[in-house]
Each structure stands twice: as structure tokens, then as C-alpha cells.
Image (cartoon, rainbow, N blue to C red; front, side, top):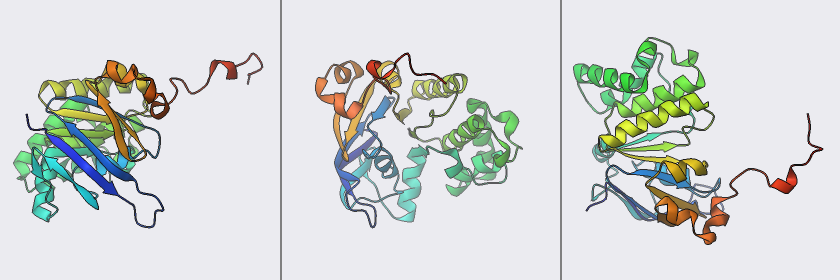
Length: 255
């Protein structure tokens, strides 16, 4: 079966950087998968995602969408971004229009869709993300959780086949995280692939079908969760299960 999205041996160095951000990174995603992308800060997770729909272009290697190499012409990028949507870690990096409705509309209009089709897509995406009552609200007046759902709605309005979400649940309260995963569940049930870059090992264990682990700009392992977490060689790139060791917590710790 042809992967819906594939990164093949990508290399990339940011201008002025001393070390490369990607060093031969490869990963393939199939339709309808739930994927957790793990790795320490600086491992290359965000950089890999930015290559998926042409925001960044590799110095070597290839990105393929539904088996077709990514075309970096304006027309080619529009085609890629119809199929692969990226939700940034900080919604403030994604929201820029005056109102929620305008922000969600931006993607479909940029794809050249009609006003009527755009209105229909905005309504569907807003309903799915639970932000219908916020459509006339200024984006700057939203809470952090509302901004995250509006940013996701803006991507969903383009109806991509793949959603790449970069740490979108970080900083959300448990109720808001539950809402986001409910949205993901509905998308996957419709055949959409969802990849979440995260540091949350519980998400990787209990939510994902596939866990990919990055280290030093490469995907060093990609397998079902049970296989990943049973491999002692991955303890280093996965990091500790808790942010402290038991022997570091003493009775002397107090406020």
C-alpha cells in the first residue's frame, strides 16, 4: 500500500546553524494512522513536520504525498497543502486574522475555493472543534485553549488527508486535552491520518498506533507502542518517564 505521506532520507541545516537539524530522516505514514512523534527538544521533530507540506525544503532527500514527490512550485505547494495540514505548537504563530471566522476561512480561500464552499467548510470545522459560538470573536480575545481549537479548525477547513500537530496539547488543561483527542478520534474514524509530536509518553503508549522516535535529526525507531517501550536501547532518546527521580524528592522539599 502506498503511504499517504513519506519523508525519505531528508537532510536540512538552518541558515547560519553550526549543526544540521535533519541528518537522513525517514518516516512513512499510512492512511488512518494515529502516530506519536517523540524525541528530546532539538531532536528534529518540528523541522521534520515543516518539510511535510513545503514550508521548508530539504538540501537532500525527498518528501512524497500519496506516492507523488512534493512539487515546490506555487501550484505544487497548493496541492500538497490541500492534503497535508500542519497545526503549530503555538496557536499565536498561526492566528492572524481579525476574527475567528476570517481566520478559519483563510486556508480554503487561499486554495481558491468559492465563498460558498468556504462558508460550508468553516461551519463544519467550527462545529467539529466546538468553536461555532466564537466565529465573530476577535482572535486576540480568545483563551489559550480556544486559540488551540481555532487553529486546528483552520487546518481542518482545508480538509487535508493528514494532520500534523506539533505539541498542540501542551499547556492545555485535562478537559481541553480530552476535547482535542475527541476531535482526533473523529478524524481518524473518517480515514484521516493524525500525527502528534509530543513529550507525553502516556499519549504515545495509549493513543498511538505507531510511535516514531527521533534523535540527532534522524528517526531512530518506528513501531507499535508495545515494541517501542519494550526496547531498552530507547531509554535515552525517550527520556525519563517522570521529570524527577525518586531519590531527588525528599521530605525537605517544601514551599
